[in-house]
Image 1 (tube, rainbow, N blue to C red):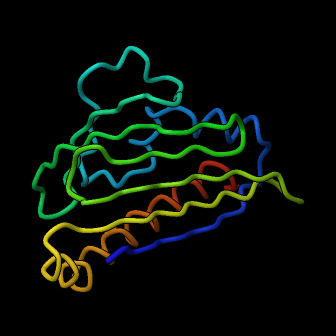
Image 2 (cartoon, helix red, strand yellow):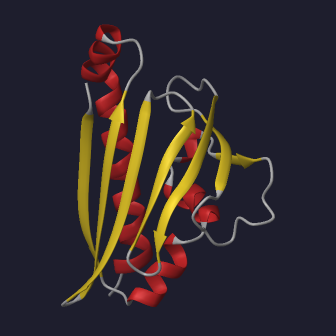
Length: 155
């Protein structure tokens, strides 16, 4: 079963500032809960700016401090409008994450849409209902708050 998570946020900033932050995979650590131990590994010489075809390898500890190896590919990038990342190896059977930026009155509307599927069929569906969905929500709630601090604090 495919699951969807969506969030939208208004950033009181300009498109150049928001894009400059979002386009750098290095900034993922800044918007990921510290207890998750997000750590980019492998080749990092081209990690300052994303591009279609880019492979990002990292470890993350989403549940009980257990490190999971995750490899993501940036599959599409449209400058200052959107980018899409997809899991190539990791804990999900499918992870497809779209990031959209749109200039609106008052700033930039940022929308994240994640489609994901867990492995193990029925067991995966139970795991999603019991804790995975909640963990995805916690991560994106943390991300929402951090981005709020970065772009909207005091503005």
